[in-house]
Every structure is written in structure tokens, then in C-alpha cells.
Length: 300
Image 1 (cartoon, rainbow, N blue to C red):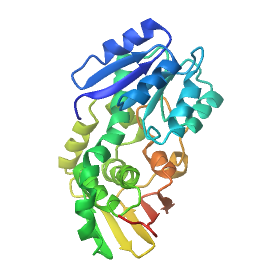
Image 2: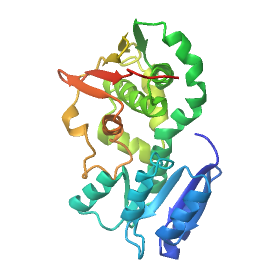
Image 3: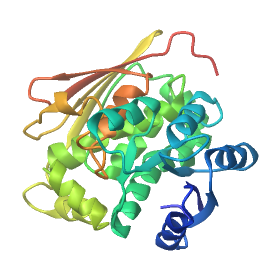
Image 4: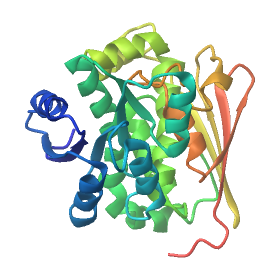
């Protein structure tokens, strides 16, 4: 994970800000604080930020109003926001999800929970940012490809494949995030059998990557691979992603579930579905997914 991630913590209670600063007192984070929504917005408009930890209930510009303002602003709409709140009723959570908060913390929370949610949010965006500058280098070769078949086994394979495919899309960063989530799911859940509850536990203990590496060497799973079939014409890309797992109840993961929003995982497919850059359709038991991405009129 990269160092010096710039975090803005927003809360009208000084003790809550002190707790966040103490928990994130680690080399990879640089934390600034704001005691109100208005102060936070002023800081966002005058300095870079990678992640916002936002209290929902504050006087003046409250957290939900600030969240809507962030997501409506072109410069900040992709900024990940963790909503910390005591308002955890399903309808309140759903309201926050619809406003753009895909990450939630219920007060009070354990330090390891905050760290897991922060790492999950950063991991979702970091790879796309780090590779964005290289998209155009990959585009020239991929534009010559009309049809292809790829096999992949590891998380690194999935990341590299997402990089080259995203280079062909009108919004490469958003497309890269969406495609990577689907490819990672094929590896971790499909081929390696890491279920939802198990991944939650692994994320809270910061052991997910280690368990993935272990299973890739285990005789039960090491020979498994996932496949991606790729077709391209002048108007669209078509991806068919399949794995060697038993499938899953994909319907319940196509949108953010208020009942799972406080977990550090379980939103990847919904995030991919909500980007607006692709159309996706699961087939059969859920171990095959067809993805279409419109590219007509895409100019570089």
C-alpha cells in the first residue's frame, strides 16, 4: 500500500477527532481534521485529499449534506467517504448509500475496524490511480486486438489484465476499478473459495493478502485458473469472465446492502455495477459474468 495517504477527518466532537488521529497514527497516513462540514469543504477546495472520514450528525452543514456536495462536485466525486454515525437504521443507511457513502462505521467502533475500512477504501482506488499514467502506453497495442482469450490465477494477474482492458475505455480509471473488482472476485471467491464471512475476518486482521497467497500454493486450489474472453468492435467491448468455483448468490451483491455496509468487504460487485461505465449480467450459478462497455465515440 502506498505511503502518505491524505485523510480528512470531520467531526464536531474533538474527542472523536483525537481518537481517529491516534488510530491512524501510522507512517502511511497523514491526517487533517475539521470540526464542521463548512470547514471541511473549505479544506477540500484548497488542498488534495485521498479519503474523508465523515461524521453524519453535525450542526450547520451536516455530514449527509457535505457528502452530497462532494459527490456533486466534478473534482471530488470519486473521493471515497467513510460515514461514521450512530444513525444505523436501515433507512438511514440506505439514504447515505444513495448519497454516495459506500463505507460505514457505527459509533463506537474498534480501532481495527476503522483500520480495515480505511485500508479497504484506499485499496479500491489506489491501483487505478497508480496506473492511470500508463493507460495510453497500453492503448496502442490493445487497439489492434479484436478478439482474445486470457487465463489468470493471481491478484497480480487480475490487476495487470484490468489495466490493459481499461485503457480502451472512455473513463479508464472508473473502468479499471470496475473490471478489477470482477476479476478479483473470480480469483478470491470463485477459484480459492474465500467466502464473505471469512474475508470479513481476514480483512479485520489484515490477513487477506496472506491467505490468498497461501491458497494459491495449496494443492486444493493451485491448479485453478479463471478465464476472460475478449471481443471488441467499433462500438463496444464484450468481456466474458468465468472461474472454476461453485458460483454464489450474485443477486444479493449487485447493490450495496444496508445490512452489510458496516463490513470491510462485500461492496466490490456493487461498486462495479454502480460505476455507470459497464453493463454486467451473471449467468448460471454465478461463476460466469458477461460485461459490455460502450466505447463508441471514444477519442484520445
